[in-house]
Image (cartoon, rainbow, N blue to C red):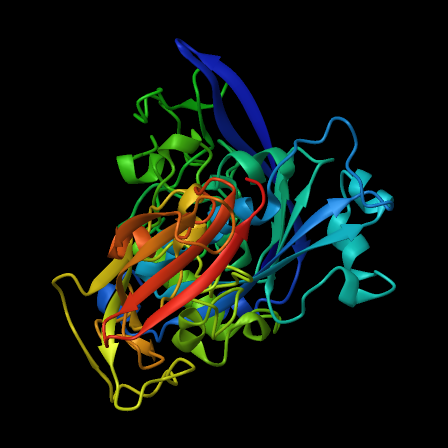
Length: 479
């Protein structure tokens, strides 16, 4: 087989009234390797076969390159690195979950090394030969690096390391979806395209296996339900052309001078060269190649990044802790869950309660399916709402993309907070000169409740469903 390391650059052009329409462009550095992997792929396009694979969950760890002194240069794009990393985790799950591939946010870190920070090429060689590997590689994860020096993305095939330009890391997730495709075994849909020059890797147009010139399984991207194609770029760049509404308008030919047959699915493929806003899918054949690449694990890199606890890991917070002070704001460190899934938190009632969440395998608790006894989050939730994806006391977690059975019932025995009262001491001392403001369940459970109060002395009273109350005295000195 040929092992590919993909380098992706980004071209920005103005098209009509669309300012700064962006397009991904890549080049492949081809290294000769063993044929073992290619011989192991089935090249199937059978949906039933795809459905037969067991799901896998990958850890994903994010690194931000900085200078040795821990700073960024004046030209570096500022960003909230954790927020942008969570954006990418959400995009990865939304895109790849339908094919049984899941991603667990495993953390973020920085690499303070000016040489690496300024490096434009040879990044993986530098990382792989680092004096202290633990400083630059999380061994049990897919590692994604954000670089201020490069204007491309790069990922070796079958190897869970990805470098993305800082601008693309911040502004959109298409590039990471594309590079993760490479890391999981996909090539560009136009791989080995050589125009009218014949060659063993040049893919022919025909998709009929009975034709004598059929070679879709051994040429091009080795996927039989993607078309033989060239890079599909916007008008004026000298290749085949895609219009601004994602329509192929080119007249290209393969290396046998047969006219290319480009479908809308080819234009929209995440592994094609086309407008970012067009790229939103892969084919069944590509999905099967990914699943087989994970199963075969040609170079032994991918298996280490797979969670041995599988789906159970997705029911664990990425940060925060249990138990957390539901009824005091002195320290607020609730368990936070990554975006990218449809969550439904259902009111649960175990015998005796769970001061810590139930084990993933424990489904002996009872729960209420609907009514007022649940809260939830959509997989497309926006970044400002990420801190609200928390596991509250009295609820179990359902991840709709995984199963209808909720897990991890967390109930300290008091039941949910159903209302309460905010008492303000108008003289800022404990006396009877007070203002009393009743709160419904929404108001008293609002995490911004204290932030929204004016400075002063307060008693916040929470009423639990079982009749208990919790009073918390708060002196708020400033906003």
